[in-house]
Length: 215
Image (cartoon, rainbow, N blue to C red):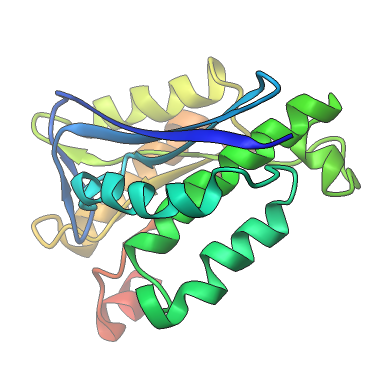
């Protein structure tokens, strides 16, 4: 099997602004990578999501650069592709940054192709030691007009409708202070009950003294 092309697309959609302790997030944005092969199997990878304030507009240029290195390669050789487009490009592209994010999307697409070709999920190809894993739903962002009742509705939905056994909410908004964030934690706990794991994420917004106070 050989790679015949790689296509980069950027999607953007409006949504209410949300923020955590350190960052504000505007429109939703997604960078999608499509890798096609001579056997008709297509793989998809992506970057973006909630924390999509990265400069996605620069990503297609890196896809154009990688395209000449990818066409004709075997997409099943995920390790070789990751090495040749990653480690062996350090002198040209540097050890990290946008290129590594684009490579991640390409890598996901190649694993997608490999799984489709073999008829296996990625977790099976990686060994499949676990048939089930525990996951959580991240959310609880600050938003205009979003108070404690709205926060409670959100985490309750994640538990009751999405069947999450653990949820995460944001803390660290300087306008809230420790007391305000403690009220958020209390409200979330009331909403999900005692049997659900409740996590908090300050996104590097708290200094040492405030972290100790919160703890």
